[in-house]
Length: 124
Image (cartoon, rainbow, N blue to C red; front, top):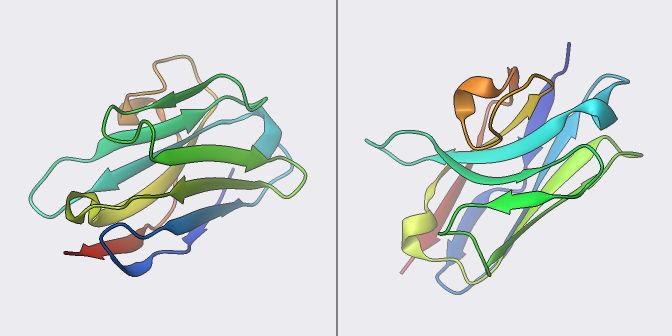
């Protein structure tokens, strides 16, 4: 069992930055692939970024490439999402998720555990 708690969301102006954190409970955090997803009002949940148990490889949605960076610190049981050059279209609830089962890192259905989400709002 893994419990995930996100933090770091908030209101930021376009062009600004935020760093999301996801703290995980459990001694087996380092064995999980971790992902960040987001869901905007009226839209489906979408993949943002993912990272393997070792920190490499990483994957990004096209919308995140060049602006977002995912990283993890297994000693702290924490995964991060650094978001730079934020745009109003990045406004959403951001969720972290953990999986230790076979399947694409891009597909939310392959994840076993989810956090409660943190709101990110980017004003124009």
